[in-house]
Length: 95
Picture 1 (tube, helix red, strand yellow):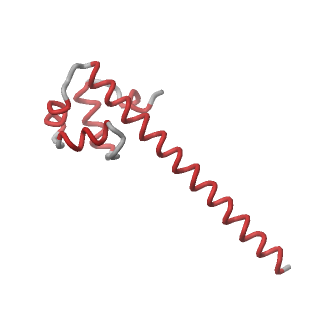
Picture 2 (spheres, one colour):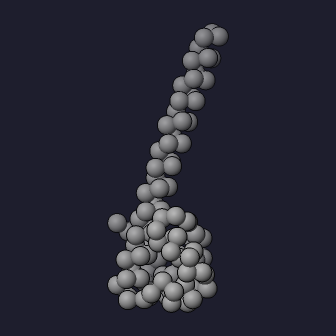
Picture 3 (spheres, one colour):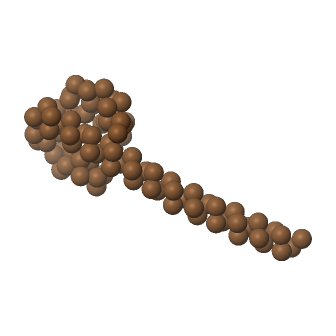
């Protein structure tokens, strides 16, 4: 019985490790998708980063970091971005 408990603990730890790696990968994919879509939408609207940052009341550096996959943001900021780019919030999440 003791060995069964040890094996179960090892397997549970292994599954958690795999899940953690998968979750990180999924989070990274979401970050890339959202960042790329925001960047593309801004370019299509022909708005400079400086102007959009001013419109949504964040720094140009922070917007640049969002677009270049170096920072995440809140849903409030994403909503402001979409509103000011006149795009649906679902556009940011679509492939």
